[in-house]
Image (cartoon, rainbow, N blue to C red; front, side, top):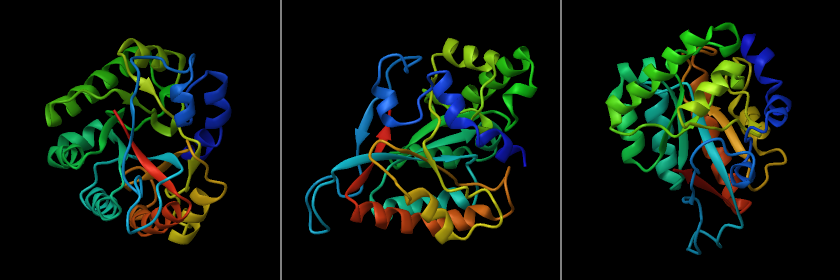
Length: 246
């Protein structure tokens, strides 16, 4: 319930604070809060090949809440099959439990970004607690991978005034999303998840999906894994390629 209450307001919330929701926002002056994030074309039909013509636009695939022992490896396998790149907004407590998966994400050419050490809504937490959460999350990623994250997305997509200040003070670039599959719900089928993502999908969209079920409906990640090939096939047909963020 809390995910729905918070996340349904993300677009309006993000726009009001000039937080990036799309790749175009990341390139737009006034939206960048930290050091520039480089958008790296990669993946699905980015160049002419036997599989089809070159891509005409790019979107960003992002996955929240992992790494997960089942969901993350399966998502990575599908991405490898389609030569697609993604950004994984990971939870520090899960990275601490499965550092090898964080390393695998990076080793396969994807981006590891921060979603927090704990998956708790920022508006309910005090500033000192939030500061500690950021520090622990960054440290967990750095300890596992040797790399500090540059991108950040808050749980449920909602910052507090304190957490947004902390993110910027730590040099983290916020990134929300413009498309989602609502794959965290137990009632969605893979086809419904793919349909929500693909409905009016445009170049520069940022897609939110989840590779874990720690904070959502049980086994919801399995439906995400089943939906991902449908999404990537349709993107290929639409000549939309994925990008990496670095």
